[in-house]
Length: 133
Image (cartoon, rainbow, N blue to C red; front, top):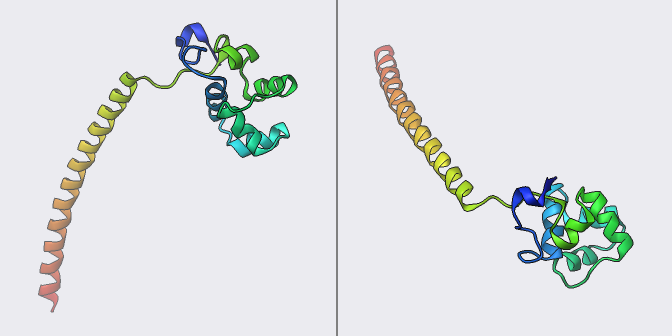
């Protein structure tokens, strides 16, 4: 859990809905919608309605949701308080992409090296087979 002041206001009421925060908290806990529904004793359709902002949980279920997902009730309702960290920013995506490209270049170089070595080994093997026949 992180404080909203540490992560900016990504999940605040101005930027996200209750359903957005519920979805983020559920995914942060590694739960599927059916798993959350089962743990809360509600139907899958109910959880889907909450996450799609077409319905809201009753107070007793809301408290259970917050406890189960390890976020504050205040954060679920307003985006303020203890909740989940904001999604990775564009800067992180660019850095990740650059790291992936670097790894791909390294693999390509390794592949070229292995391909060249494989060609040499094949040539030697053909010579050995040719000499034994």
